[in-house]
Amino acid sequence: MSGLVFDSIVKKFGDFIAVHETSLTIPQGKFVCLLGPSGCGKTTLLRMISGLEDPTAGRILLEGDDVTRIPTHQRDFGMVFQNLALFPHLSVGENIAYPLRIRGGSKADCFKAVKRLLDLVQLPDMADRPVAKLSGGQKQRVAIARALALEPKLFLLDEPLSALDAKLRESMQIELKQLQQKLGITTIVVTHDQREAMTMADLVVVMSQGKVHQVAPPVEIYRKPKDAFVADFIGSTNLISGRVSGVGKIAVAGGTLRADDLPKSGDVTLSVRPENIRVSKDNGENSPGSLIGDVSYIRDLGASIEFYLNVAGQQIMAITTPSDRPDVVAGDSVSVAFPKDACVVLGDA
Ligand code: ADP
Ligand code: MG
Image 1: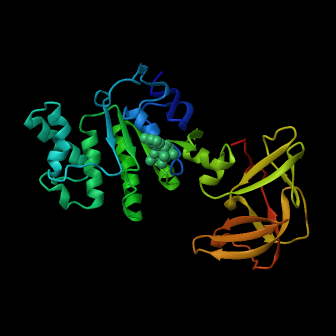
Image 2 (image 1 turned 60 degrees about the vertical axis):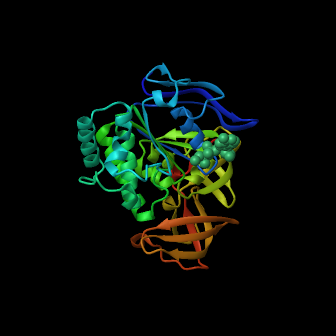
Image 3 (image 1 turned 30 degrees about the horizontal axis):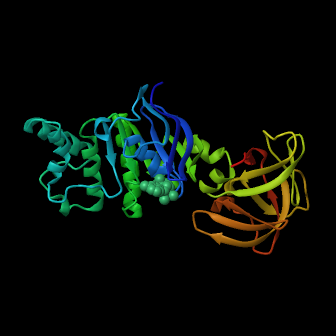
């Protein structure tokens, strides 16, 4: 099996299960984000990959080889942690060369490698700078260069950008993504920031409370969330509960909605993204796929406009662009249309 494989991995701390039994495959060369709220087990999973934490049960395979019991320093992985762990008394070049020197690389080879790595992270001619004099973003790049010095098979990063301010973080996300594409190295990044995951990842692993909820490309996670946790954690959504009332039909408070992939009967929860809901002046019609509501308030954010609606006692949020803005004001009665393919049927969390 190519790539990195978790085979029934479990991690317990005493009686506490930090990672419930997990099996998944991370294909070689992909950029993967482990995404979830604080405390859900992301770091624990990453530390098991790196060998800093022993799994309680299960195996980790890399390119078919069982690496579960191989010590960290023999795993050939590059790592960057949130605190970066640079040597403050060494120069940029000495920091980057450090792993090469440990491996017994010659001075000339190290010099060449440092130059190549500094070019790669867009810090040319910085080798002699003291690390202490660098900005946050520059330190980040040095940590990345040092982690890549030994041309690792796997590149692991734990919340690497969380100490940076918002603008810099966004540009570093794109830089990191481009660097990964250039090198083609399998990369696993821990983050609790869904925008960060959406920006960088080929595959997002959504976790909560030690469990993996969904593994899929970012757009699929957004459009076809598997359960209510994923739907709610990634972007914003409207969760609407109802009961299957016919082929492709769900009875909900205030009327009937339509959806594909429904079970034959029983209760269901739908996720409907706010940008897919259409609001118009109440035309008195109450057909399947459309409900009557009224406007509680409107939030105009310039680039988008949010409509907070009361539909049969439930708060629903719809978003439009300024050019699609319906001609309604707070207090108006409105028709709220839910297109069939916008109603995503969720599974149990
Ligand atoms: P995340 O990185 O998603 O924020 P962690 O993997 O750090 O979460 O932690 C997952 C859970 O495991 C948390 O509840 C945390 O308190 C617990 N945990 C992590 N490391 C240890 C440890 N060494 N001993 C006991 N509990 C731990
Ligand atoms: Mg963590």
